[in-house]
Image 1: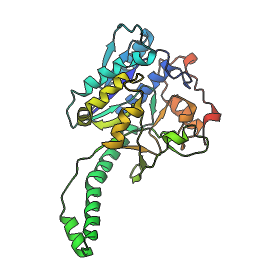
Image 2: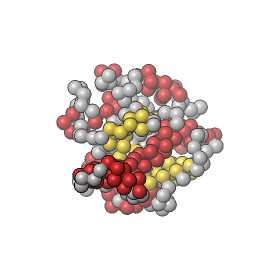
Image 3: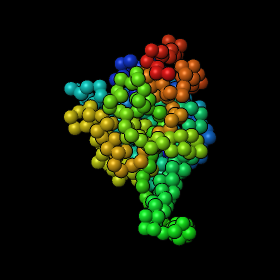
Image 4: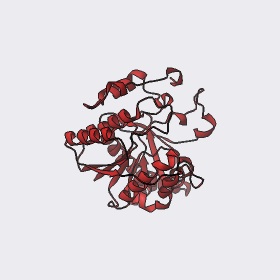
Length: 318
């Protein structure tokens, strides 16, 4: 079973230079998820909306109803936010999302995705397929390779080594995850404004759906088994207070998991576009790709005055 979870809000974005209108962004990104669900079995979609406008909630409800997909809503009401900055105010829906996840069956998949990630067709299906491949690689193939190298180091012949590896039925239980965005700041290109911070060594892995690399950093959008959220509940709970001295951002919360406990992979040819700033446009995409994906996910409730995609070509690296 796959559970998709999105937190939505059409209030003024914390990202002041966003390339699209936030209301329209959230509607189209949700629509892209609904389209992906058409090719999936055993999937549900839970949307947590945090005090959005009546227009947005009405449009969101209609889009989901018309899709005929299995969608549930949690419409959050007003609460006391006096003295909280916009970032802190947005964290309450994080708590609601993770409380929901902690009650899901351990072996179920969870794809938690922000409301500004626009999906390619079949993106989620490809993520699930690749997850199985990477899980086998990490927990079956790699242990056998480790055994083979160990036997060689002990002076075993190729014949003896092959026999013992063939008889080995061990399987490790390393947790893995998938981050669907190709985060371009992770690459050492000349115009990268964060070259000295984000760029770190990684492993690149060929898979049937393309090349993936390991990553130490993600946004709050990724696919994991539900048991991983529960196992590392203390760390995930710190996402409820990001933007405060207790937890500044993803880099000092969930990144600790990706570095030490969970092998997180991201595709070099991404499955989503982060509709934030122009420099987030992936290396393998051209501006016209982004514009087409944006247009393809227009809804019957899209307003012309909200529909512009404002790419700054000077920020696009290739």
